Image 1 (cartoon, rainbow, N blue to C red):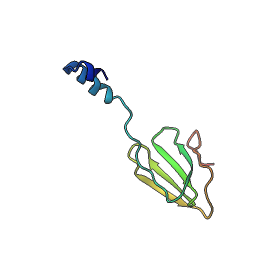
Image 2: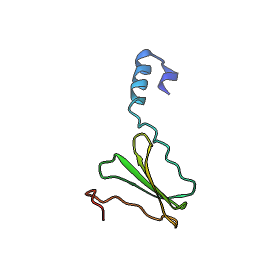
Image 3: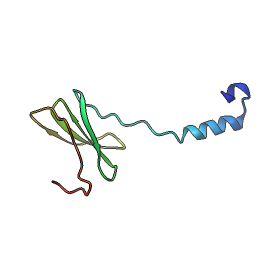
Image 4: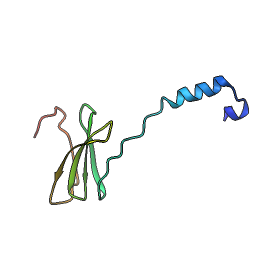
Length: 88
């Protein structure tokens, strides 16, 4: 709004620098059905998602690249990581 009222190089520069601080868009992580559960790994580097399509997927959180996929014979309602990364 202030750029409309009193445009200046300084104001434009401040706006551009501020926009760089905004979070980057989240990577697209897609299922074929409703996503019923999402969890982030304790270190924040991976995200796991479960869906009504019976598929659990693990993704690289930053890029959205699929790490691996598990198929289940029923809809998935919950998904979680162990706080200490141990399998249980």
